[in-house]
Image (cartoon, rainbow, N blue to C red; front, side, top):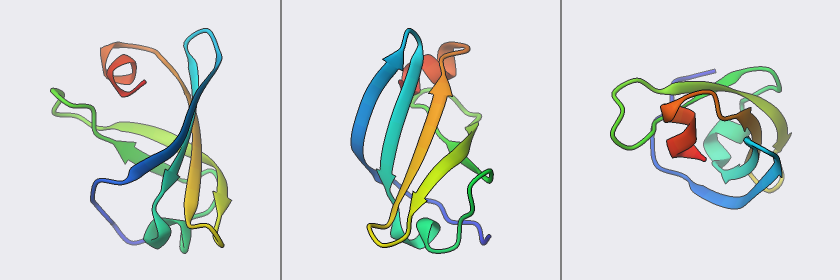
Length: 80
């Protein structure tokens, strides 16, 4: 998968358990070439390092990715 960087819209965000979040992100150019199990690197405001989060679902027709992650520190807490 080629390297793509940008700001993308979160079209759905929900807490599915304490400290566990489910995001659906609109990103057609990534959804077109991504595969489940690959990682996206999410930047948290105020942090220099990005957080790698695995893609768990892709809807190529809608151009969306779904990620599910657990808050494990200050960076993922900021993303949540």
